[in-house]
Length: 479
Image (cartoon, rainbow, N blue to C red; front, side, top):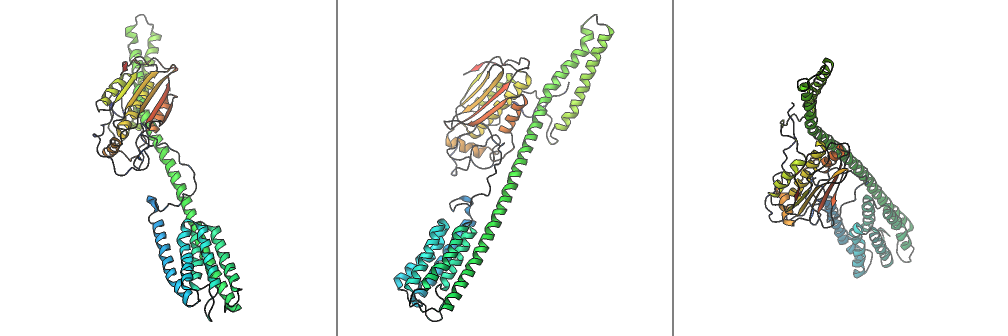
């Protein structure tokens, strides 16, 4: 008889240590549990009794630009804000004295114009249209209250020319193309209108040269900014697509690995059946008297076919077995082992209520699947919801076996301690909902997993038993 293999003993993982002080940082999501995905569970998120590593990457297009308060804002947003504020202060310090001394603007008005125009840079970082309006209003005020001395650039002084160009380039680089174009047009039309005011001391040639220069500089920076934005969006799209493909490939690999584990488990069941056939066929001529030679020969052929099938199964198992793992010979668990699983979990201190019917339908495969689903769900309660009240139900649902594991919301300190004490937290090996779903699919069943209204988590599996032999009986456990 072939030695049976088991991927793991029928005992839950070692429980976490007693709850300690909560983590200072609450992390991002506790929704993915089983072998949890990377990232710390978030404060206030429902505690999960299963893992959801089989998530499908969604095509959402380029990611949004991070806000300054986001953890991933550094260094892009922080450096951008620093550069913008520094440039605004520098241009304010230059433009106010020039407006007051060269262009004859009253000092108080010069400060107001400086605040509007230099402040348009940081304002546009948050409100693009407000920044455009501030710069154009400041330019209109400069045209009304200022005048051009001989030889000075007018109607767009050098400081204002730099502001128009920098603000247009900044808006274009941040994907605000329409405000940037409106600013470019306004940067020509508003000063042009101011140049028609009387007694401004500017010549026609000087005005034309000044506006053409200002428009050209602004157009160049707006074009550069737009090109940079297009390149960034393309790079982000390509990067997101590669991440989606990588996530999909990772999910396919996890499913393949889980199916291999399930195939190794099934080997035990099939090997046992074939061994029984071989023994019965071999011993039939000795146990049953009066068999003619043809019938005895038929039994011999059956026994030989069973031995050949078992030999081929040994070869198949050698292919499926992890070359780095050790062959395990413990029998595969089933319905009869559920009470032992519940008792071992209770020894960890978890408040557990269990209801297991004393007679459950289905064969060895259904029993093994039910056991593994309950074991995985309880293991995740210990890892991620230590101390939470938990209910386990395995009942006869007519033509199916219903397995339900539901836990309430855990104490925050207990959950934080579980995350800190469990070295597997943050690692995604695909033995959570992916594994439970594949096992349920093996017998044509379904599984549902998700948060509950009270902040806990519920795993519910329905395993059809139609066509299966009556299973072994489990002890009735109601407490």
